[in-house]
View 1 (spheres, rainbow, N blue to C red):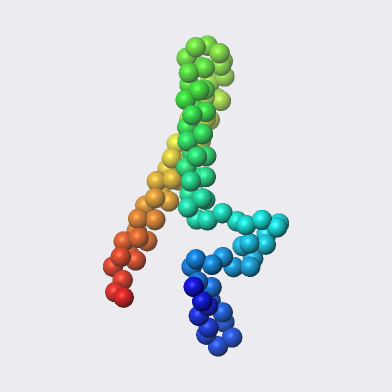
View 2: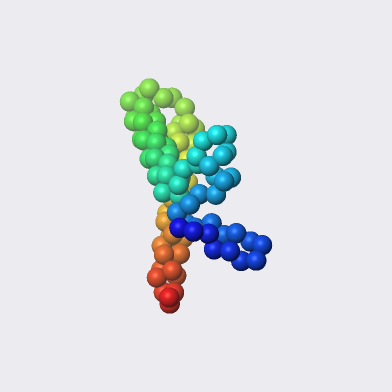
Length: 101
């Protein structure tokens, strides 16, 4: 995709990463999809850790209820955050689909 030029302002195409994105510490940054996948993986990991702490508490391996409650709250917060991101993405998608070309 070629660049669109507005007097004095180059605009990069969607498929072409900018020079800043490809040269950060000598490596290319991930895409938006990679960022979303990583966030989902992190939320899943937090959820699994919370489940393990609940199981450990039920088995008597963990005596401190505070760590269990803290793990559950972290899992809840990560889930709520991912739901809000999903809602914002769906709203943005619906807005884009309503645009006339």
